[in-house]
Image (cartoon, rainbow, N blue to C red; front, side, top):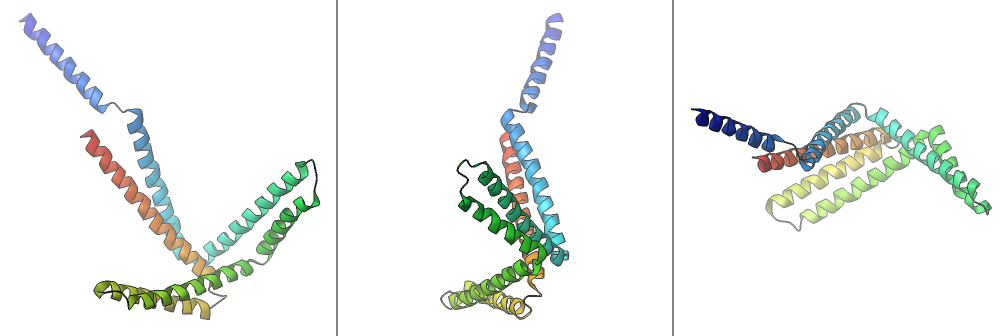
Amino acid sequence: MTDSATSSEKTTEETFESVTEVTRETPAQHLKLAFIKNTKVIGMTMIIIGVLSILLPNFIGMAFNTFVGGIFLLASLALALNAWHNKKQHMSLWFKPFVLAALALIIFMHPAIILGVLGLLIAIYFLISGFSSMVLSFELQSSAKIFSLLNGFITLVLGVVVLTNWPFSSAWIIGLIIGVTFIFDGIALLSIANQVNKTQEKLIN
């Protein structure tokens, strides 16, 4: 009777230890779980930003303009500090900081300039891309031909719309493009996180 009880206790302890070993999280598993969680958070955040960009394209376009101006200004300050601490003190070292600072001021004081330039470049890109897709469609077969022709036509029309409303459509189109890009990038990150999660579950099982 005692031997039977002892054997039962040992079996229970062995089962508990085996379950503990299975459920115990290794450092590699912990890193993967953290990666999955962080990737999902980043993906959802990007999708939310993308939706807001589409709903408020003009605001996002102006925010992008401020962001570009801020980068120019920070680069100017960094180069100015480098020139200040340089022992040789060449005047040529101050040229880049001065130009970048001037560009930053122009962007901040006249935001329509950079938005207008970017809007024009986007319109030209749409026109070239749409025309190229339509030309390429005649060399393709069946469904690929139809898709390429439709894609080229829509892109070409979008380019014409942006160009005819330029420069007033610049902020709107930049915000829209940023929004669509963020949404697709967010969806891609969520897909990656789900794929890694499925792989992790298969390894555990």
